Image (cartoon, rainbow, N blue to C red):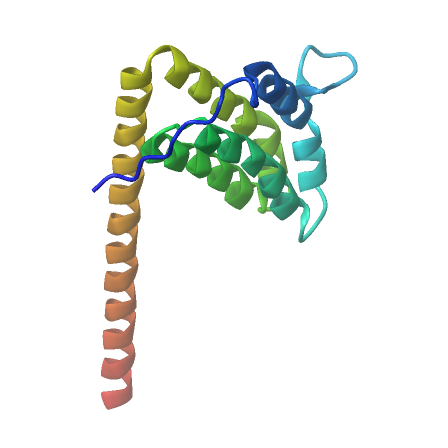
Length: 162
């Protein structure tokens, strides 16, 4: 049984408002001498410990707005995955911070929302594929980790017996 939310009046959440927020979070600051832009999300992510958490909370506003607009759960899950990838990888010192500047989850999420508004079937289908693929990969990862633990415990028990 699918959960369906009743969309709110689109005038309360304007696409331009979300575009502007994504720009601030992902692209507001131009790196001098380059054409590349970073946002305050990446800068906040440089703060050890809580930076990526704060960035994820700010990014969640776009997902919440999409939910208010009646976007299907599978698209919302894909949006949340974009934020999770940015937050988890961004937590890795130095390389994660560079990734955080490049991934731009907020821009991706607003583009996904806009695509859903223009082509709901296409955005939903591609989101479903991404969510199924990520879920399958996570299941395979858990199985692999379980097998590794099983192998290590077996080797330890064998070593103890000898």
